[in-house]
Image (cartoon, rainbow, N blue to C red; front, side, top):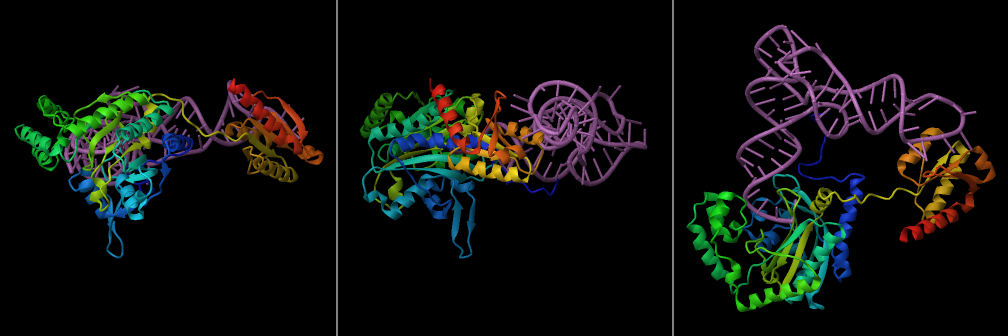
Length: 428
RNA sequence: GUGGGUGUAGCUCAGUCGGUAGAGCACCUGGUUGUGGUCCAGGAUGUCGCGGGUUCAAGUCCCGUCACUCACCCCA
């Protein structure tokens, strides 16, 4: 037991049947992006270390203490990607995607890595579906991006979550706010680590969960009161477009994000039943990031939603699991010749688009029937010596128990008819 | 990095006042020869996380250690 190999700490695995649910969730989160014209981008899972220190920000926890880093034999420094936006922007700049039509609309899905202490819903290898829209600061785009994330959650049946919305201002108005906030925070009674955070990035003190901190924040200055004219108008329009999308939200003036690149619109989807790690998705605008990574001065907005946490949220809401469909037919052959016939039958069915499994290991009929039942198949196709000689199949409906003998070459047409009959029935 | 909780069968867990280990589910076999589910009968399964200590005797008490887990910081 002690020297049993095991998966690395904090890395979730999705085994059947849950793996089918995982894939369904990932597809469900990506589908609304595809419908809105976003195109898939597949990117490296590790990148140059400097991409993150420059892009995400040296002062963030993600970069300062949560990255998996390594050097290769050429002594180049890399990091397993802790988030998706920086990599997308790097790729857009490198390949000049922004020279085409704007905005560039991309989405991605895959694993990300953070070397944190694991807990419920917080993993060292986490899965996200994310998207980025680059090259426009149109507030209608902000609303579209948010609406797409919201749509994904709703399509998957989630209801007990809320969208928290805020704006962080821009390079013109945020510095003034930051000064006011820092002055306020420095007068508070805070522990040393928190005082350091005030210096590094005072905004991040705002969503400290500890009571002793929150109690002192009643009169804290808020960004919303320091917005410049342009940011105020932008935020107003984002909200107007959100209404047009039919999206509900809650203003959360203390909402901040852990990454340095965010500007203006920021948002987070928070689930009510998930415990401490309640964020199922979040994102915002990053109008300075492109330039900071050596590209042109183009604005952008995006989000990442947690595939793992969305799956947990569905479970927490008691939603029916999105299991894998079992094979439609389960073939059973008794004896050597019959087993050859079954192999041919199953292959023919698969070619006709009918999912088919079969019994292996030469077990008896009783055992094979048991296996057929457990597979969840709707039909058992049994061939023994008699059927092999006659060129027929015993086709048994495992739901009703009815059984009939039909010619081998008619099985697929029979089943296709059955399937369309039942589909029509289900559609009514 | 910091704090709490838990480690017993494949899974979920029970195990009293210390007396050498159990249930449910799952699994296997049988209940007629070529027919599953339900039912009945039977069966296999453990380094009680690991190491040490106390004791005639430790799953149970003590110490250490490791793992898992929840929470803080932070984030999806």
